[in-house]
Length: 101
Image 1 (tube, rainbow, N blue to C red):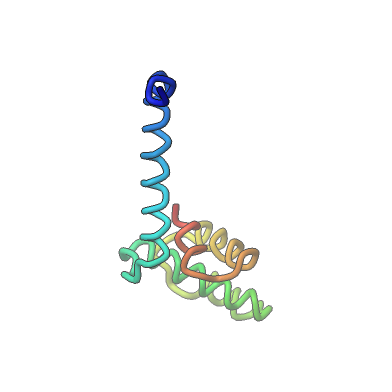
Image 2 (image 1 turned 90 degrees about the horizontal axis):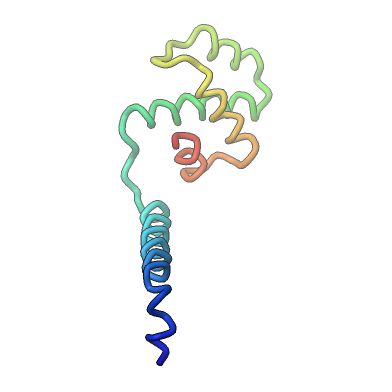
């Protein structure tokens, strides 16, 4: 009797179950994974953290040196956005991942 009532909604129920399984496994994997990110995202996170640490200490001279003198492989816009996210939400592995999405 219950199966007969659920039969028209079986597709939706399966879709919700698949979504929940995939979402929860992604959350568990992200929080437990300790491998370093690949080189490109790692470079973005590293440069964003460099900018963040200088801004958090209000070291404007060091920030200007980092922005204009220090060699970086990429343009600074993405790194400055990352530094801003770090300033707002705190620097952590999860905020670093969020910035690179």
